[in-house]
Length: 427
Image (cartoon, rainbow, N blue to C red):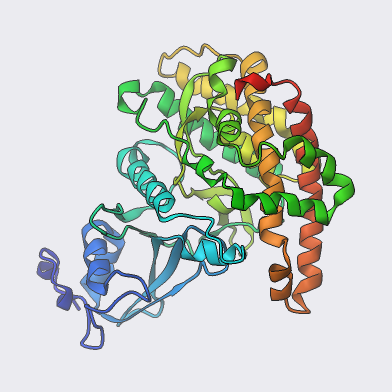
């Protein structure tokens, strides 16, 4: 047990038994147990309360991101206090491109560069350091936010664990209408914050949409591969978009800068709002609720279009029939909430739903519809992916893929229609 007075000064030996090596590394990460304990001691009140009552007898961590195609290694870290039955858990996220490139199954070619990873991680650090505490949306608590440094300093995010309290949903499971309304509610709060924040606090600081850096020629085969899955469905739309799938100007315009032509204000956007980056609270019976527990991964947040995040989420994460029935109702809901929040601060809204927001949504949707062809191919396509499935997994994976191909088909159909309304000289 650690005496209360010992908490006032951090000494790692005060927190652990002799069995714990504070100089040891956390799993295969570059960070030590001492770094972990010091970070929690400085910023985690719950950890300190545990430490006042007991010492740590064991610390373990393992990578829960393996095979998920993430741009980081994510370690579930368990801290076992001597007089507690359940371990105290936190999450350590260490940026790196190795796992993503391994999961891509791209015949040895690297799709992700170290420079991209550095930019993405440091952007996320800036979000949590500069803005997160001031925006009333569900986010995970951060205990250490460390940028990747010029001198080789490794970056990290140490955060609260949501294990047991919340979870993400698999990509093939479409979001419910209630879920999307809740996402729209929180994103309205997000945008209203930046619309009311003095522009000298952020405007011009985050102009680069680093996600367009993913438009490499190496991705072209993933787009083309979807035609092998369903040629009768995807060959015609692929023919329309194939000259743009590796175009930075195309994705930058349709994903971000189109607001300039549509009478919409510039805001900071999440930039990667989809299934994998939203956690949902669990019901008492363990099922997933419709209530957002946390919005994650602000690695590509940038100045852009106020409708782009919702277009991305509804395009990629809703089944097409549900989306088509409800998307413009949800867009109206988000617009009305933005207006309400700004009016409460005596701010004027000078953009409209029907002329600006709807056109912004449709324009943003084009980029996401095109991107949806890559995602289903990236996750489920290719001989190496299929060979990795067991005999038991194969019929399940094929069923998931069929479901996603229908979602993708409907998204691409709409993207083709919306694309007709955009002047090609804009990008």
